[in-house]
Length: 162
Image 1 (cartoon, one colour):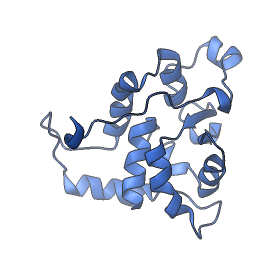
Image 2: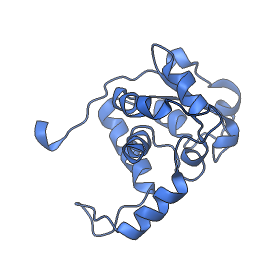
Image 3: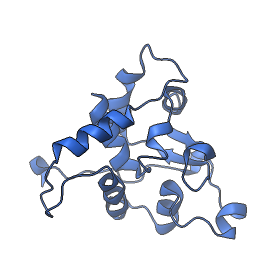
């Protein structure tokens, strides 16, 4: 169940696996999911480029994460990233569209590509994924509030509904 939640969160948000996914806490998810529009606040110390930012949580991510929060301490790490990373390396999961095995970085690539499908504009994508946000605009002027970070059109294509 934890593996499913980690993969869904990574694929839906594009957060970096080593610097962000590995550092998120149970308390951050509890706080995010207490709101009507679940938005996770990633602290600057948890991001590669040291930028705090909000990340919208897809309804499927919320559903997968809720049972994992029960009975856990707020300061506990949400994901067991290192053991999952080792498991992925040993499994050599084949990818259907190219000849290399799945790696955690593929989750970020998926989010980048799927952002077009769900309606993220370039600014949304850059902010949520903290990609290309080192300029003056982002450091001093652009910093959306949680109410401005919305899940636009969260639709996933699965083999059943293609």
